[in-house]
Length: 344
Image 1 (cartoon, rainbow, N blue to C red):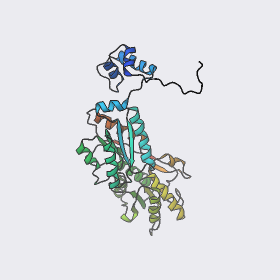
Image 2 (spheres, rainbow, N blue to C red):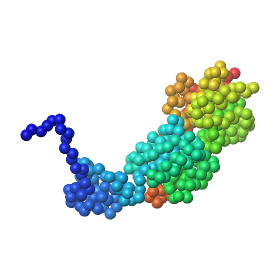
Image 3 (cartoon, rainbow, N blue to C red):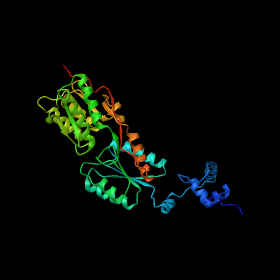
Image 4 (tube, rainbow, N blue to C red):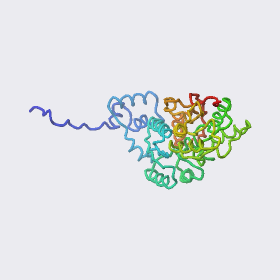
């Protein structure tokens, strides 16, 4: 009888660990250790032989079953304000890649920078027995990091910092200083700041570094020229418009986030001012869009990809019993067309 070509293919049984061990001529426990991410007590030649045979035979390690045996979910939770924020999206992309390379999955949750949302999202993550948490939305007064510490759940803050907690971030105070030094060198003396959320270290430290540098140079920035805001393009437009309504508008603006700078561009346009000619403008983070705007944006670069991968490294170190230290990555000034000397 001929085979029916329309019949579904016969199901093949999955290759088991015992099959791999038999072909490698080793005990099943030896094969298991050789295929683990941290093999111990197995020679290098055996590890190579077992792994090569596993690949040839099509064996796939059951990470879920391994998790049940070890008490590990192989999941890392990531808390972010909004994944629509290009900065957090860039960091999360590198977090996910680094976690995947280490054999972990990620679970991401938007907290909307709201304590109650954060509480609900964190509780949901903990119910899934995640192995650790990367916190990208920390604020002064937040309790999430303290709660994780009390529960014994490994965690690390990324991008933002809190005193006494492990973090991976950019030296934002220095970044603010670099922005101020650049404007001072160009001859600007009356400047404005769109300062973001001052409960977040990113807004606070960038603003502080900028204002202290101007003050040390003999040109303190008045409070009226510092406008607090959310980290969004509409907030940047509102803050930029407020600065342009001052009796003596600033000749330059430092926005502590590129999206704020983007909003400020719209406000300057609406006020009849040309960016980079009438008013200088500096952003922060150097997102990809900064170089492609009609007037390319001067910005302070943060290495977002490295920030994300280092935060995963910090968690993995904790998983293996290590005690990693906080990391401050160096910022870099990237000069483009939006900064020039004050208009005469």
